[in-house]
Length: 166
Image 1 (tube, rainbow, N blue to C red):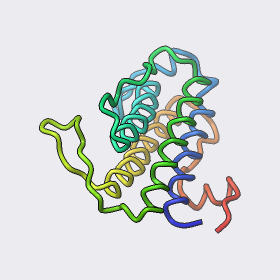
Image 2: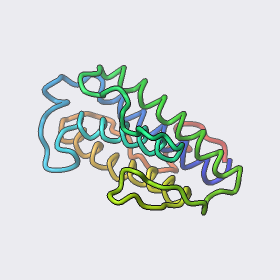
Image 3: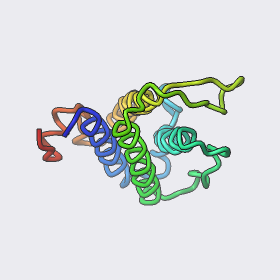
């Protein structure tokens, strides 16, 4: 397993585990305001999923990125399904970029005003590190909501728990 595959698998698995931990929470807990992230657990997780979908669409040349069906009002199981689909598409794209040696190839982010050229490698790593940043916020929210056994979320814990082969 190379470094990219480790990062992608860790990213997908760790966010999945946090979504699973959050499933039993009440609607009030999902929408309780905090002074971090996107204010609520729900909004922060929706933001993470939406960003993976949007960045994948952008890098695939979609001229209407960000027009996925809304995440608002989805059940926790539906959010988990959207996360799985988004990460599957993102992983396939990232692996294609790696396999074609296109890390430094530029593409145009049409959502920037004005549109800006970005490297595929930079954008892929941006998505992965962006998710880690928000997962830290989600972990903090879960702790504050009294959820027990919140995972640490680090890569070595993922290797040990998920059975990733070194």
